[in-house]
Image (spheres, rainbow, N blue to C red):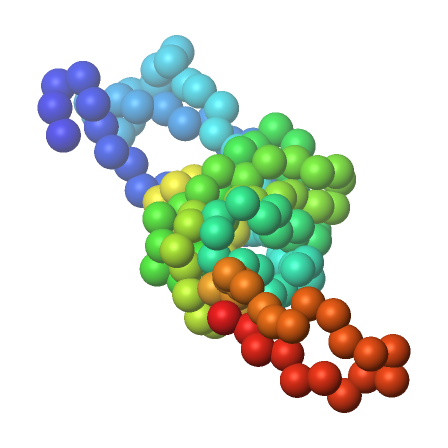
Amino acid sequence: VSSTLVLLQMPPASEAGEVMVEVSNFPEANTSNALPYRYVDAPNITSVYPSNVPSTGTDIVTITGTNFEKILDYYCKFGSSEPVLAFRVDGDNIGCIPRAGLQGDMALDVGYSANEQPTSGIHVSFYSEVVVDSFAPVTSPVRGGATVTIS
């Protein structure tokens, strides 16, 4: 990209673990500037709670799964919305607060960066909360049967 910035697309690894990355102007050069890079297993999402969430952007969605590395940040993406930073709940759970205004059934994707979230196959449904301004009457006989008007 420039004389001080290089973009590198890492090749796939055969297993999780640390490798050393060296940067050189020449393929046969040995350098002393090797830096560690870590391959990790993708998170495996097994469940989400709740799966029906109000679209207010205030409720926590708890995501249960495996391969949540303690040293990594995670991002949640609901449908095509912008990713949000997750927080650790405990070893097998992370939490996300979805952005306000989401509607309908959306795929949940979780990944290590805001740019890449592998597909989990799990969906979350967002709904608008009902707002009740009034209802009448406000009392009824114990036997029930009263018709109540809600607006």
